[in-house]
Amino acid sequence: MLNAPPKWDDLDDILKIRYLMYGEFPIYDYYFDGTYSESKFINKEDFKSCINDLNNRKEPYEKYQDSNPLEGYGDTSVLLLRALDKYPIKNKTTVNIGNSGGCWFESIILSRGGICSTIEYNKLETDYLDVNFITVEEFKNNSTTFDCALSISSFEHDGLGRYGDPINPDGDLEAMKNMKNIVKPGGLLYLVIPIGMDSIAWNAHRIYGKKRLPCLFYGWELIDSFGFNEQWLDFDFKGQPHTQPVFILKNI
Image (cartoon, rainbow, N blue to C red; front, top):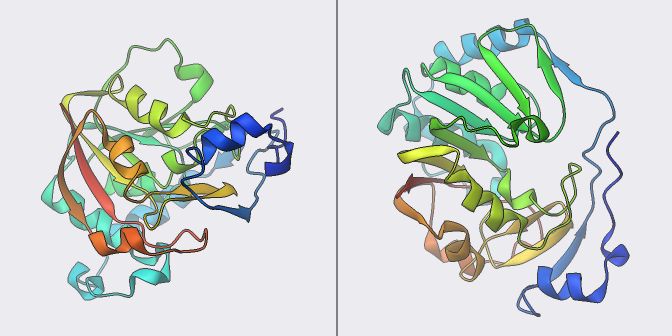
């Protein structure tokens, strides 16, 4: 059973300073307990329904191109689908890092012909044979590498304890560094993170701006983006998880 995540006031002063990059970032209260004690089961019928919806989608992706970026997660899937059209994953081993709450992003991988695995802190199970669920603990000391990876609103949580992960001010940076051992050299990472003025909403997520975003990309080559506007890096979203573009990064 995973312990409940600590609240901001539970941290010592040194940890607080490191999380805020020595006073560079504001802190907002936005607490969640994303741990659960038992494994979560995702039915194969849920996968089939999602994949069917994706395969029969009628709306053109361009319809959403000028949507209001402040509406939150609504266009993330559309941006990802556009990214996968341009940088396809068909017949490629593709891992989803962090489940993001269901079977939707695994279904996107499968609908685009990818060979799908997921690595997640919490235990997930399914009777759908086309998906391989692996916990972070199970993946330790595993030498498997993948052609591609998706990280959909995941790394901004690493090190905050929200999902039972270890408390670590640099958990997100270490996770990105570790991805270089998971994605094959020359492979692509489809990365979705909230952007705006640098800040932390404890313990929900980080928001990446002009200071933290380059740190996150270190060691990767940014080759494209979908839905990104550099002007948003100066916008203070007050800790809310708005504006999540898709970045295409190459493991150089």
